[in-house]
Image (cartoon, rainbow, N blue to C red):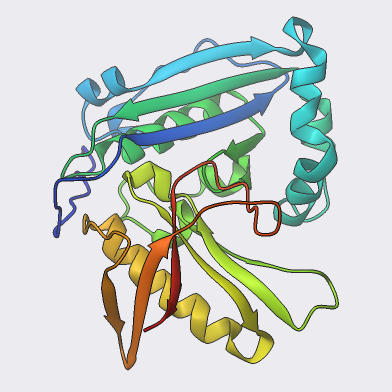
Length: 253
């Protein structure tokens, strides 16, 4: 059975190009596992036309390849993989799953990207990096997803609480909104007692954007009993978050 296409019930025109980038690491990939729409959750065979798959080996550029498992990315990988980086360290091949699609009223491209990911896991991929969310996945976790599943914000949007280890405040922001042609959301200098509440507020607004709502600088948004104002995020040396996407800053109205 084909997976129903995820719809954006509140879709408005005016969004950006939707980008999906996934890097799947392995030592080798089996060649005898056919793509199956019903087995891996592809809504239709035609959805594969959205996907570009590139196979790259460490031999092509070892420094570039090893950059995915060193420096800050290694720390991120350790967090998401529970400290076990053996599969990532053993990888000699990277398969990139790349999608660029004009903004539209469904999330077929996201479904297609993850369906290809499940297929690559079945073929031998061991670790996956979602480039938009900066999140690593164990192959076993992706393999456990049912072929037919509802959209889950927690999979495709990462809400990050970012601050110094001993700091009493943090910056809270999303990663992943680029998949939906929408800006990421940022709240600066949130005191520790407010992290959970602000995180929930950010998720609520992110859910609206994923559903297709278009928000811009100057807009006011009501979430429960709170009203927030949106302004454009302009990165500088003091507030650089490396979003690789446009951003909107949330502040009390």
